[in-house]
Image 1 (cartoon, rainbow, N blue to C red):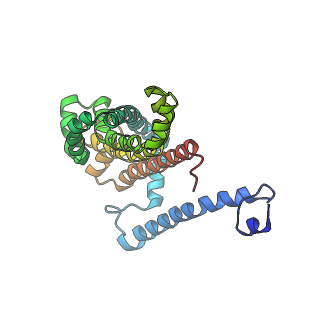
Image 2 (cartoon, helix red, strand yellow):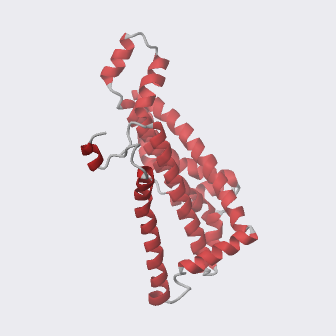
Length: 271
């Protein structure tokens, strides 16, 4: 390794602690940002608002979360919401990739389904959730349907865009080598569309979390959205913010996992 590469800051196997410093650089800014935000929140709640009916301090929220964990109530709500989220997201990914392939392969399908996808994608979750709860009841499957209805469209749109963006010259070259339609899809089109699909999945994760909460607000027996609604009815701010913090933390973890999956499937695209 040359001296210029060392000066430029490129990681080398011979530099002791290089990997540790890189890890610290990756995590220092996010951790400092979160801690700084929590400190500002604490000071704002304690010395400016000074009314627990309007804003709970992070310390009070932490105590509330600890109490809910101790009684097992938080785990119960998290399990219900987690099941609704996981089932709905998996179905959204499977349906979205399948429909994206159909739309990318058929101009007739694009013309027929395009207006419906555009309309439903722009429809707010809060507009369709009450109807779905009314039609399918307040059990888990109504929330799963709410998730699918709202999370499937980013996957459809990004999958179609990724498949249609495949290099035509590359497709023609592989066809000239005698590849079948199936081989063309699995070996060329699908790998080329992976960055688009993963971007759609990351968007779907956020929409799925919102959909679970909205669905539970309109009708549920348990879940973080149900817990949030109950707390708001009695102005229990620590409990309300406990649900919000858990949802925000879940979103952070799921987004991080999606980014890790993206890096694992695209080792050539690490920036």
